[in-house]
Image 1 (tube, rainbow, N blue to C red):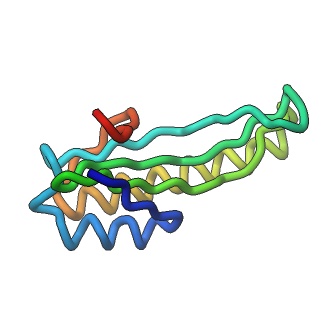
Image 2: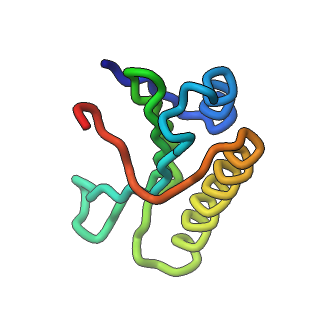
Image 3: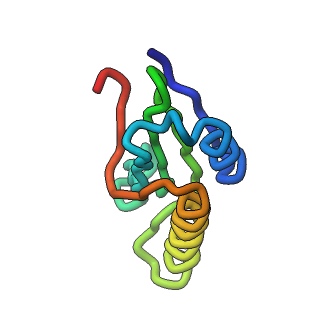
Length: 109
């Protein structure tokens, strides 16, 4: 069991297309992942993460969107980028006949 990693939505969807009949339960998990910054406690790094079990592997997309500084105009752009990536994933998965749900698969599950 291993993890296949992507950073580009189109590459991730391309991989899903190649193996869509092997995607467990035809299910892709998509979530926003926030990580604390080591520079400042108020800064959080935002990424969109998508995962799916394909055979014995987990296929994972992690796309960095930006930093949340708790300053409205700047944060809005980061959140909008995350929303756009989530829409791209939802639309791409729908075209492939895959269901999108919240959450994250991790190795060993």
